[in-house]
Length: 400
Ligand code: PMP
Image (cartoon, rainbow, N blue to C red; front, side, top):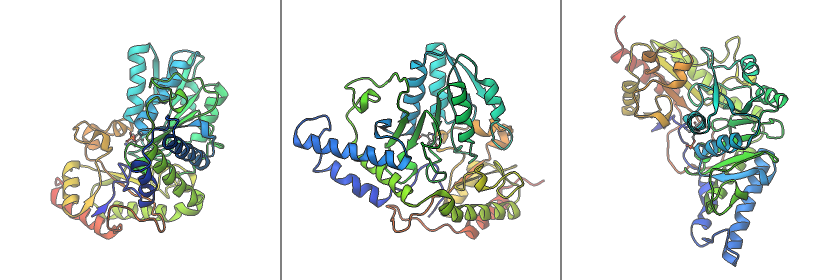
């Protein structure tokens, strides 16, 4: 099987699971307990927190362990918006993940917030001028993702963070697809809060991190025993905290992005070129790498995601036919799989709903030298994937 659905989830890395194993077995103490077993669990949890802070270049108390990015997005958006006395206005974009869109809609429904949804252009890019214009005296929060999970477009988070800090408005950033593709350096990028998911970076499903910058007013919506400094009550999942810390450390040890991203970027560019040149009706979603306005080093497209639409074809048919040939990918985002609705990201980019329904996403992972994955998958074979696409589009395409 050639697995090209890494934006949905990555196979866990052995080292991450090995690091977690003791905390799932003999070391089963509750970190809140004051006996020996509990204290050891507490130490492991705090060591994991320090390690995550080291990887993201922030301070340990700024790290909260969660069950994943859906939870991190919910906690941050509701927690910051409800605590911020500025007003009840939120700015976000139409292309955000459903966990961001729905958290904001919840605030609109139950807490009288209003929201300005920013548009994107045909390539999926945001206008920072529109963001500047949208932020008002009563804006409580801006929520914008770093890399879009369907188009792979990278938003200019440095510029967005600058605009927000000049306006004195907190910025929440969903960085799920960014870890591993950009250097998530929280010293440099002045976001207020940031969400990370473990299962997209080689840690198990159900692991996540929420960063909240020190001093940010925060009203937790997860109430109870006051664990995680009151940010997220509930007995901590020590094993998964250890596992996500290990996965982030692996990313950090691979060095700065510019040095390591080259190979993945080259591979994805070659794949995009080959598909566009050889596969009838294939059109790339988002900016084309190498086109005048787009290259990986200018940070406007993830080297890990390549989505295409295939006019006149059926996206589900392409997926099934690829799977029959041992190639696994997805139609837009996995979170909305099974629904026949066109992707909200593609329709926000101006795609006709019928064309949006034909979208197929291929997503790649950085390989970690010497780090075995738990699932055995075949190496990417560009010719095999392109030939399969040619065969499928020729067989199932509607004649002109
Ligand atoms: N945000 C983005 C951009 C995502 O791609 C995903 C996963 N599809 C999430 C949030 C949710 O992450 P999790 O599965 O950890 O809840």
